[in-house]
Image (cartoon, rainbow, N blue to C red):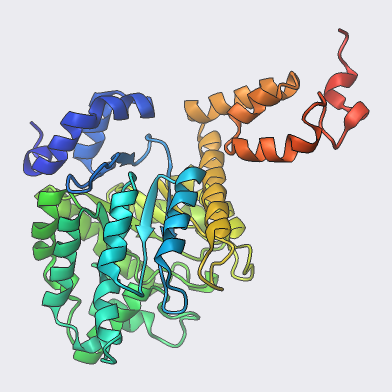
Length: 425
């Protein structure tokens, strides 16, 4: 028994039940999976309290995973809409879902999503605490640390599989992130609430100060800590500044502490990063955080594409995967503008899946290379069924093909088809 796995009974139980199927699905040996989990470079997302859960592995060389965010807001709160979005992102092929709800009955919403979602479900517990305080017209600085830890424990018992917790955001980092020379200041909702709490109370972040208490809560349920990037750059010009790296250094130290206790960790990353800085950002974060699985939002490589941020994020995501990213959080066409609808959510999942596959093609991973070869063979044979099977989104092949599905060629070329031009049969 390894020293790490011996400390996490819940994780051992999940591996006993699922290791064979996970190895077959990922094309990896059981031994390599165990070794990576022991080293902290791979995590198994799964809380035994989540009914009907299919746990997944995050961390290369496992397949790059994609997350979809859903959830209510004070300006748009409808549980039925969130259920439809959940169905849409699952059908689009997301690997995990995060409930970022900040309006309505959050316990009821969370428990409904847990019941309906067979995929790992993540949350940001600070949102629930913040909702309770702000809806009562109180300042976030009135929060007690006990409120936050009690909320995390409640969600762990409910079955939440991973939680974003901004443990690396220190009192010093809050000051650095709030300086006027930082173009966008602090753009993380959870990070901004904790920064306000620290600055108003002149105290250290309770998630940092009482980190061992957090570990005690998460260990029995195998709740993976997604160590949040509260100081991620919200503008390209902020990428790589002192505030960001101060937090990253803290995250690396905390991830090592968690691993020593048997608690799994992922690291959350940027954010808005110019294209020429993506590789160095990813490699720097990976080095400072001991190679822990890296979960990134984008990165968005430009700031001026509202309505198309899923594209800006996919560009950075593909380059990020090739540089070492393990887990992509989607962006949708609604980013920076409004709450995404079902169509936005589906577009976001597909953009991130394309980015993930593009990065894996660049890495030469066998599953990606095999898919590319299948598509090329089908295209050369004008085998439309084969193209659909090889496509990341078969429904799009079928939908766009529908008006001319009886034709052997596509509607763009017709009898000018280059593939048929050189046939001698």
